[in-house]
Image (cartoon, rainbow, N blue to C red; front, side):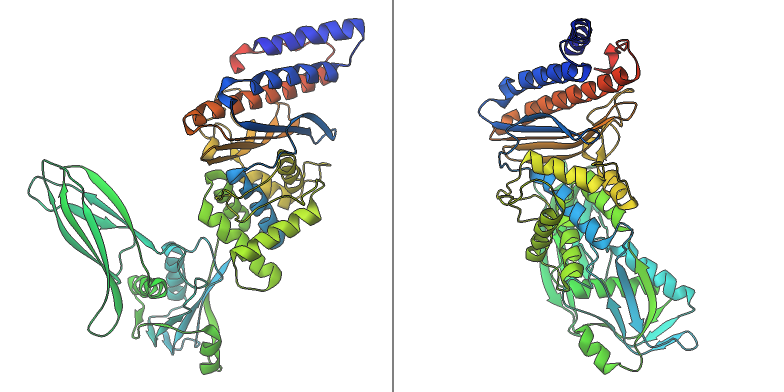
Length: 489
């Protein structure tokens, strides 16, 4: 707060003697404050890079080590979501279809194919949606098998089941619940409630029924205390069979009987075998790409970020989605869109979950300015989709607990990043009146025990930038120094 008061004094002095402009005076004071924070002991033995840019004026207001190639951790998601949104379109939706013979009298006579599109948000509720829509068409029975491919195009995104175990009264068996009940997963409860609590054991076996159908047996053993809850997750190796089984059970819950079983087959072969009867029955549409990008950036979900850019690359290059194609799309995007030199930029994931990443804060700011349309104020629906994907300080995502307060919440939009010895924070700050500044702050090399202190220094830097933005806007509108609310900081 004292720094802001000194800024006001500097303004009065500079305008009185006419030696520097208002903006220059304020910028000098912001520079002084940021350089002071760079000397904070928490940043000792580390490299910290900062870049602050005004999209309204096109000026670089502050930079320190802005060309240093550093690991930006999850700030890579800014690049991957920008490239994916630009490729797919902000209103793009993944489609998952049920294909088969045209129903007659409420009966589908023939095999049905579950055809996906690598949807990173395909979870059990999507299968519930397909079952609901098929029932709405009057279908009551499928006389045939449920087919789907063996790759992940057609399957549920998450092949894990989550299990919760809750202790009851002593001597009683604990209660066990599973998030996606299915006959493909058998739960054996060998646990018991006890006064003492040692480690529960959870084992998994992949078996087959007498009819040769695969299933998973999960056995829970050991003691758990009364009213204590333990949670586990277990992977399902037979992803396609699990997806198909859940679909059949969702259909049954809606009153649609499937007389066949789950089978795997290449879609091209299915079409050849059923060339005269393959028609779209129902389609599930995912949330729009803009909502998916928001989930990725606000919550920093690594696997979803990778899947999002990989599927965007499959659309761009007409190939199967792979990490290699996703990285290619990201690199093609920066070469065609950014103004900064990107020759030395290194990315190998869409999530930033890598120790090989090399980016500069200058490049990160360029990504934000380009993807948000802030440079030149060319805001379109696509630009707004990217802007809306960022976490909002004091309100949601990974910034929910930071930049809080009545006069501060909502004034920082950003993306965090954390790895061992890596802390990053990049985004946009704006004054209450709306003057935006784009910033990127990345620190590498600090000890793990200093992580929280490094974050605090980053926050102080952002508050300093925000204070500058506020003062510039106020001075532009009045010839008198603004009243400064000390409660904000």
